[in-house]
Image (cartoon, rainbow, N blue to C red; front, side, top):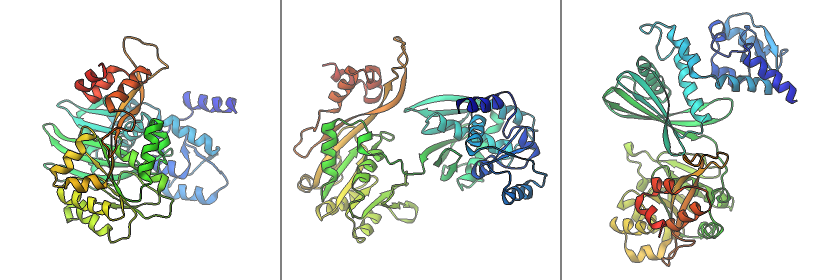
Length: 452
């Protein structure tokens, strides 16, 4: 089997196969269509198919291309390998192809090279495990950066004239007005390649050199992550499981954007969602699919706010309610009322620590006696990069992946397993991360406290 795979790779590397770049000029099939239908275009003009005798599929290809089709049978695994190799080709190949076009006439957002370039950027970001793509127009270039493990990393720069057709392509995909460039826009679209499917959230804003665009990449399918997979200590894990098993009350998760709050809440819900209960979430927007839950998207433009949605859901006989974020006094009041009347309410707050959550709710007008009665706990978390133990460079630490540093504040004002600072110190002593990384994420004040 290994020999066969090597032979296939050799064919790909030495030029037998160059998917889309030369083949697309002769055969009018898009990359996505080929991936979806399990075929690949070969450099010699033939088409790799899983079944060369499938006349129905071949006739469909003939109809789309209006050309004679020469099928060449390959296994589905071989075809997937062809696509995988093609997607590992550097964007220089696409750029060389684009440079042959007349920039004044043939670089519209509808042109195949622009479509392929946009697809390639998303695929590259997925391969690098990026969560966001930043497309930033500079005076003389289009800069592309990926957010990987919480940090923005420059991927590459493209010629400045590509900024407009690339942005229009993304706006069209996200169903955004392409004529209005003076205002920010938000939209989304689904992107699928042969490996995975993601939801792409698009945000544009006018800047001095045009429009900046940020793409947020969100898994389209339920990741099936559970609490066991989130690197919590055993003590914290058991305490959180006890909270999710409670029949009623309020549980809050705090932290900045991108700290994993939704991941934690979803992981807990997955463990209880099969208990013959009605789970409803209110989100803005819905980030991930959660099987077994009724997910309600907020639409503030038409007045369907978190508070309005929460009031309606309370008439839907819910057992567990996830409120994406408590932003205002009205949502806070309704959430507390629901937590006191037989519902388990889960939500998030943007505070720096677990103790700050109670103060934030009191500032929103919640009565302290009601809060003390309903609150089950407050969980604060951050994500820090983990040391890559496969490298041995002492002067410059290398990181790979992230882990959680957290604290769980219980109703009796004690911590389930230490404060965030104490847990950060523990990660440093275990060699999981570095003091510099803790200081970067938690701040210098937290870092100094870990040294006491």
